[in-house]
Length: 194
Length: 286
Image (cartoon, rainbow over all chains, first blue to last red; front, side, top):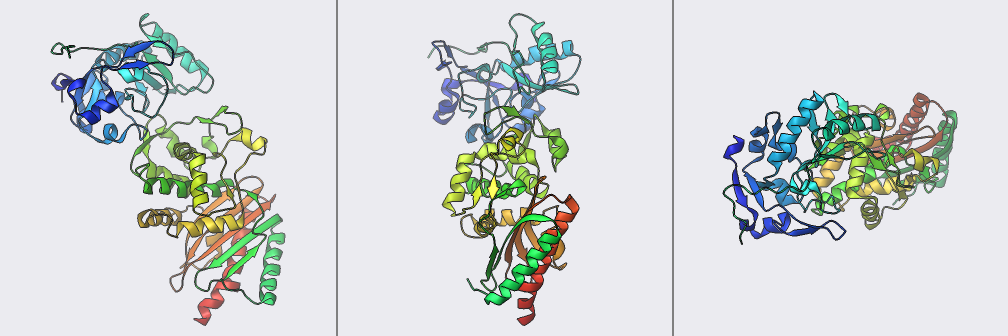
């Protein structure tokens, strides 16, 4: 399936059970007084095989950025179609650039791309809920599980532009967190009324 | 429960303690429970030992109970990562692939593995990484509650494995021979659904490490068991199936400074002695 063939949907038109989990357009607090609105528009992914076949960028398939584990709600883990915020396309473009600068393949961890606000990784609203973050656990043959490797690729990531955030190493980290901010994307056919 | 004449069990005790002494075991405990005759025979069955990898059976039990309760699905994916929090101060630690019975699992770091596959690797190959992933998932508190609800006492499940900081501070998982007997009895009892019970036994029958209890038995015996070894202790416990009779549970726990092969051989000899003294005699008389 071509990426361009994926249908875009307004999350507000989804069935109640999906809306309760995805919370399209709802305000989400981050534990302080900062409030952001969760993504409202989604790509509709008909099946997991479609996710595995669909290239979202030259070297990234949709499945690589949407793989979650049993901590995701059952409906979103097992049920299809899946709904993925449209901004994932932007993330994939940045990861493609990161791959070029790093000169090696980029591996995103399970639970490390898009995860819904219903995912059991609790905590404040974060860029993973916007599909604009990737937890990179491996670059080429290098596992990012120490200060040296994480700092090396953090500098590469941040060289892409000031809009890219790459989290500095903290004791025990086993990945590099990479994100492009709280970016929501409205498709050309989408309307934000209602 | 039946009891053997005191003189006979004293003779058994003397023989088993002699084997343990020969094997340089500084402490030794045992429970035999025979479902064919109701015989329950114990030596120092309330003595607490470091659990080593026998604690993985408690994790399996809790995991299957969580599946039965609909908290988890057996075939659901779980993120494989080597990053855990110490039970004593929350410090991050990683388990050592070099001492893991299933090093292949480390190739899946970053990806996912099915919960039921992790359960199998935890038991069959004694994977420390699989154990900690599953215990993190179900939680120590939940697992402890499952044991308590099943009236399994004598199993103190406190933390994951390979938590060196906790070990240094003496904060360990502990078992008694009676506790392991109760755990295996619960596994074949009605706490778990039929499907989970069969899963548990199937996994335990696949045990790779067979140089202890199974080594002392005739070739036609099948053993659903779990071993546990660290520098100071060597244990094996499980359910022994013989086609001609009902199964029996045997738990053998030792503390020993002897080198690995010798202390395993000691447990094999104890298993053989139990079979000859208490089981074969029944087989012969039926």
